Image 1 (tube, rainbow, N blue to C red):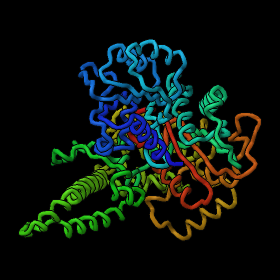
Image 2 (image 1 turned 30 degrees about the horizontal axis):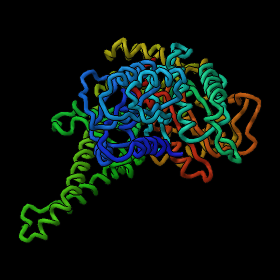
Image 3 (image 1 turned 90 degrees about the vertical axis):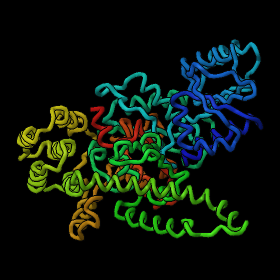
Image 4 (image 1 turned 180 degrees about the vertical axis):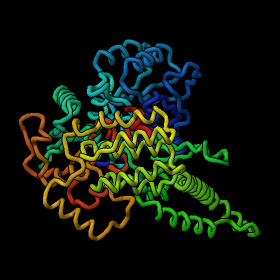
Length: 547
């Protein structure tokens, strides 16, 4: 179950099926993002695709020497663009691939428009989602609900994305959903309807234990997206923002022109692939090793290119050297900027208190620490509001709740109303009244003992004590202990054996911290394969934008 591999295979097959010769890849806004996550432009160029165009671009030239590979979402808009294209074809022959199920009536309209018989084939290739990591996918939808209810257009898009994911992984799952969320039940029903309607597509070879789709709602754990992160990928997203693997560094003081936007992709950046789940301290020493390695391989200025053999060796090594040089400057810049932000915003201290708010139950200590940080001029209004949001979620019903006093401290600190409003908005979104679970107190004797022992031993890293609620949910699911009265099955059938292939989908967005949890569970639980998806991948800024 590897989503990057699944989408990559689709793209490779499209290109191969069109045969030899020069090609243009015709895409829409969404499929452009989908393809760019799994292939670099230079990789596709090697497959004789020399031109990348948008179907909605008005001023494309006629190039009859090119074959067109069209990879498009099956929207009404795209079908209309294709009809116009086929009436006046710009390319010699068209291979059309839709990223999801296309209706028979749309295929008929395309056939009628193809008077010049330029269409070689029309197929469905179910790459209708963004493959972020091998075990993480996103639909890049920011606001999917209006209040507690689905926005109808986003429900439809999410259903399509989720069913495409199942088809691409060749899974016909049993479905469980979070009972406390009406949105989760609604999505479960919509996915089930598609599976029933398109039953022929979902007729895969039966496995001994059926796959499982578990649908959850972000409001059950509003804490995780609010925390500062200390592993490389999560930290980059939290402090700089990752958008389809791209990071905007244009605001970095003194940044050079070629580093204003960089790409971080584990598929073609070995350093990133090896370090994305390591914590910040380890990244620092690994960057140092990378630099030293680079220095050793650097061509010496005084190196004499006396013989043809010297020159040949230099030219052969130059592309690798250039690639390594790009990798070094990129990661040194990114890590340097992360370090600058950590010190400028006093994030080590802020993060320690965040972790206390998320993981401990000592109200007076937490309150004291939040108050102390709100007095610190280095703490930004954004971080100050975030601390009070975490306090409000944890101690919402505590007998000594001091939220009004903290709100006054925020006002006195000069925190704008925009940020102060977020405190009540987060409680409205993910407070005790809404949650189906108990986020903060250990549920049973075993958990209480674990927490007690953890307290005795001390934590190996105070900045990474927190474990997302998803960890507990998946742990229970794998052990067959996930309560059916809280996470019922859709339909009469239930799973008798422990699940092996699990797709978890979070309405309202997943986080890189949860992706790390899934990565670790996949590594440490033999026979279990988990893929995580969400309407988006959150950082704190994204989370608060939709409150």
